[in-house]
View 1 (cartoon, rainbow, N blue to C red):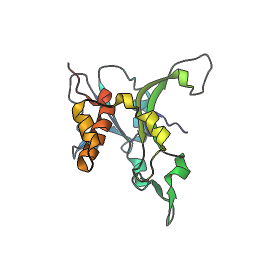
View 2 (cartoon, rainbow, N blue to C red; view 1 turned 60 degrees about the vertical axis):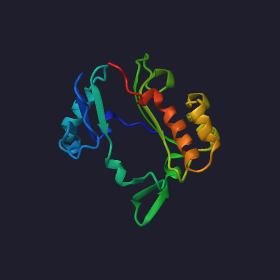
View 3 (tube, helix red, strand yellow; view 1 turned 90 degrees about the vertical axis):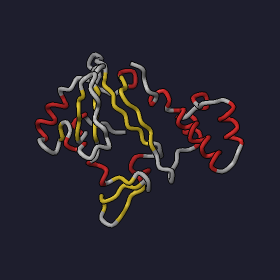
View 4 (cartoon, one colour; view 1 turned 45 degrees about the vertical axis):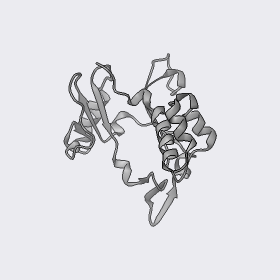
Length: 184
């Protein structure tokens, strides 16, 4: 486990409330907001003074480390010449958790204790080549979060692509809480 300050991101964009957030697939996305590579000192100062609050949309980009991590092969590359390192040796068994949180003040306490954390973002990821164990998957994707109904059950009973489709729908339902369109 290790933590990094917000200035470890490579880029950030603050979109005022009511305005459209940047499209992450826009070919000009790298020109938006502020980038650490342009002026490291100014970037660190600006992002360190950033106060996250409800209303604006905050977009953080983190790409600098991507040249060293191959998430699909689950390898760390280009650290030791001519040799890849199993990602599990670097970070432990999958999944890897990426989180964004703030710490509530506590008299003199400096540790990142769970009861001091207010989470803004949590992501667990892994490679299809190196999956978490069954118990970890059950904990991350509980059955009660899955969609149900006659269509889903019929698809689950069949084999082939229909069975795979049902599995994908089940997985998509897991993220319904954070991917559904919200009404204004």
